[in-house]
Length: 110
Length: 114
Image (cartoon, rainbow over all chains, first blue to last red; front, side, top):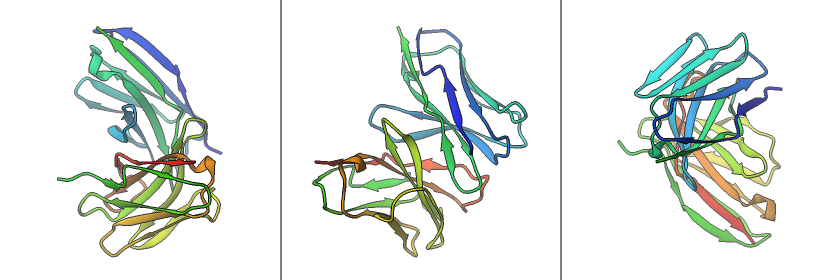
């Protein structure tokens, strides 16, 4: 059974820092991995999608990597800003659904 | 281009009642899936529809059901509501339901059961 874990559960950093959020999964047989952002009381905003054949994806200050063999993905956020404060979720695509991690709650203070 | 639209955004029901939630996918998207989010269980898959057919179903009791219409809009229904059904219900759409496709989520419908 696929299990997805995110570490750390919470993170508080000053503005300007570079961050790394971690996501690990137990079964490497995935189709893709998707990173989302969720603001309090809101839905999910897709940040990056990495197909199983890819190693990384970049969008602006965000970079996500995928290592299927070790069951790991990292989300790198460069030069963090207060507006980046949110919960970040990773999800792996199984045969028929997304399986989500429990998320990392990020707070960036000025 | 409009995103995924879910209605209603908030609703309050009492135990034993039933509820119907609606989801309009992004124009042109044919696959709709539903997820339940609770503080204790996180995000869990409910079911997925593609071209009016349920393709997959998560591990939820039969009180949870859904359907998809010819215009790809989807509804989910929960009957005989229980306190534990209080959650944020999220709908996601993807263009063609491919296993490699990106999912786009709506803002959710927050259900409170009293």
